[in-house]
Image 1 (cartoon, rainbow, N blue to C red):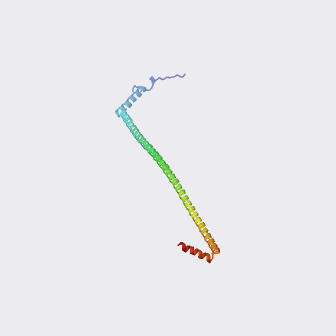
Image 2: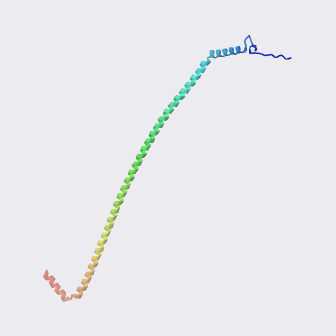
Image 3: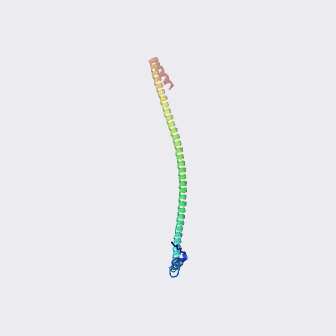
Amino acid sequence: MVEVITLTVADGPAAFGLDSYQWVSIAMLVLIGVFVWKKVPGMIVGGLDTKIAEIKQQLDEAKALRAEAEGLRDEYAAKIAGAEKDAEAMMEGAQREADAILTKAEADSEAMVARRKRMAEDKIAAAEREAVDGVREAAANAAATASRSLIADRHDGEADKVLADEVIASL
């Protein structure tokens, strides 16, 4: 028949009279001792402190960059506002200038119309004077021609003698 052997932890292998859990405890104590002797916790804390200092420095740089960015944003916002004011002023100036040009153009066109009207009226008056002078001249020429022909037909030498005597007598 077969016999069954059961082992318990207490029955496990032992060296120098110590069980395995005791060896594990001793190994942990030695490890902790080496850590303390080599100042591993100080190194870990130092490493963490260095990392914390680096993070703080990065945060400070980020804060400085943020402040600089906010300053630039404010500066550019002010520049934009100034540019908008300048643009408004330029638009107002352009509108005033356009209004002035329009007013001047209207005044110039009215003056030109008045000047051309005056010139046309002067030309019409000159043409009327020329026409009146021409009519007068034509009438005078017609009257002179009619007078010559009437005088030539009605006056003879005897009538001329009477007229000459009357003219001389009146002098």
